[in-house]
Image (cartoon, rainbow, N blue to C red):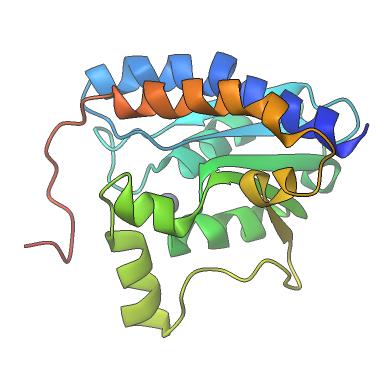
Length: 186
Ligand SMILES: [Zn+2]
């Protein structure tokens, strides 16, 4: 599958599978972050998830996706799968994805988007305060992390993706997130 087709498919998963779930979950009081697990070869989704902080503050979108996936009675090996995160992962989720054995990770919104556009500075603060780092590395022993936005710079027809990205951004911007007590933000 060409890179452009792969990106198109991942954006469709965010728009058509993750976002509808997130839109329901945000109405219940959960946050906006979500994830999906896709087969590497066909890019069909095996599982999607969305933040479930009502149940536990640890159930970020990625953790919810992993929890749902590991409840499947029969599931593919994680090294044959792609983890797609709507947003760059916090330290807990990045480590959970590594512990689960994923080798390929994709994200749409980067840490700066999370901090500025989504008003969530805690992820980067945790990296800085606890680890002295500014987020995760793109290449490490456990997985390679790709950015959809950065990959678009490499495809032959990047403008083709603008409408779907704009729709996704608009739908995220329309979500009304309830107040929540974040650590470090007193
Ligand atoms: Zn997280």
